Length: 193
Image (tube, rainbow, N blue to C red; front, top):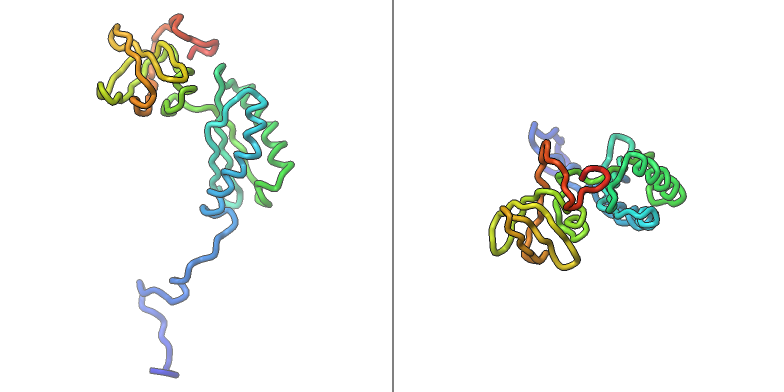
């Protein structure tokens, strides 16, 4: 009834003001998604100059701060000293630009874990000598040791049979954790991987 008394909504009933879209909050998920690309543009050259590859950039809200997680890798692996050195360089590059905005942030630099899917030729190349599980288009799920990897494909030792697969025929590979497996001449690196 026009001009009548308004009553508070009953519990569970929406208030009209709650149905309006909320404006984007600085540091909200929409803004964070855009920021990851800009951050990658700033830190990518710094990482490349250090002889490493940028694997991923993730920004998340952590209270009143932002948490910036950067994953890097290289053919020789990433030691703790490497991570600390690149972290200092990335901090300097980020602080020299407005890409992080006015929000305080925490930077975490790490290397990919053993559970990182093998999707790019460089991932397969770095897995030479390792036991992997992968789905192949013509063979289904197979387990084999990576013997070689190049720009076109990978060679696996599957139960003593050397089989060559093009990357287009492979799904994402997964390194299998082996306890007590002695490293062989198949590609063990200085860090035992």
